[in-house]
Amino acid sequence: MKSTAPVEKNLVYTVEIEDLTYQGMGVAKIEHFPIFIADSIPGEKIETKIIKVQKNFAFGRVEKVLEESPDRVESNDAAYTQTGIAPLQHITYDAQLKFKQNQIKNLLKKSHLEDLEVADTVGMENPTGYRNKAQIPVRKIKGKLQTGFFKRNSHDLVPIEDFYIQDPVIDKVIVEVRDILREFYIDPYREAENKGIIRNIMVRRGRRSGQIMVVLITRTKDVPHLAEITEAIAAIDGVVSVIQNINYKQTNVIMGDEDRVLAGESVIHDELLGLDFIISAHSFYQVNPIQTEKLYQLAIDKAGLTGEETVIDVYSGIGTISLAMAKAAKKVYGVEIVKEAVQDAKINAFQNNASNTEFVVGKAEEQMQKWQEDGLKPDVVVVDPPRKGLDQSVIDATVGMKPKRVVYVSCNPATLVRDIDRFGEQGYVVNQPIVPVDQFPQTPHVESVTVLERA
Image 1 (cartoon, helix red, strand yellow):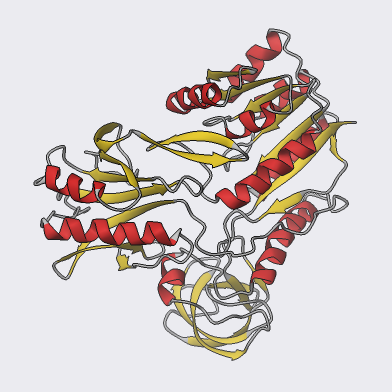
Image 2: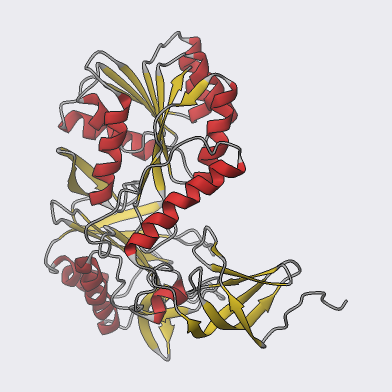
């Protein structure tokens, strides 16, 4: 069947960029037909080569910028755009912060909530080199073991040594580990056949402690020369933990269920808001510690704690928000579905003398209903849900407990706006500005803190 699209693959068109998508791609239109173009900015006139045509939209590539936006900056490396590591790197940082504020404003407008105020995005002084965790694929390219990142929407590895948004110490460690694996001729993973040994290298580093964990994610339990490799990795400056994670399956999931501590500790430590946290290979721990402190401090301030309140922290993870709140509350309850995270949270509570905390393993929706049935009456409920937002039953149970306020830490503006609507139907309203926080500079992602109060 003949396509009715007004553009054809491999042809070049002159277009004007009208908007940015939530993925940070420029949007141009030909006869109302949208074309999504990476590395372009609203207000620019460009020549674009069409690389893919779908029924209702197409993807283009920038061939030439004819009229440049004042918000354009010289990109650092095409690989960052190719792989999607830093899709906004070509836009000035001030314009990135504005884009993130507008993401939330536009979604509110679509839901007829344009009366709600959105504050300026809380940015970073240095919006590069912030990530404290890296999960880097290992593949063979031209007969050589390489580390890098996959091209967008593919599994073709682009070799990269400097990742721009990662802690530069982590970048250095990845190269050192790569060279050790090369020295012992370790066979990289071959995805199509599910063969080979080393799949990924994961590195975590405590920003304040400087402690480094290296995790070798392997397809097989047996690794040639593992003792010598372990010894060489353990000798890298700052490394206190070397772990092997085994993932036998042919899957896109990076880590398997089996861990072996090869050298040093099973965890590293880091400090956040004056608290000491243990971080294991599988722990969820925010990847931008500088902004996380701002985000969590904002949540604590917005909770309006005086030391007399009971707080529930839904999706409590390893207890980062719970323990920060515990310093200013009477009692904090946390619920989290990942068993290992709850074990870490209990250890973190113990080592920070937070005896006014209680952590349970469970699905948020089930545990909230149970607490409601048990007659628990929180003054504040903090929610920090995954991208899919809150289950309706979590909202229902929260409202049923009648807290004074709900502090909503969001990583997805679309589900935040949906949930503001749902809370609004049950009498909880937003009376103060929503505050966006830039947790992931150079990318389109935006976190935010919203306070809902009983009307």
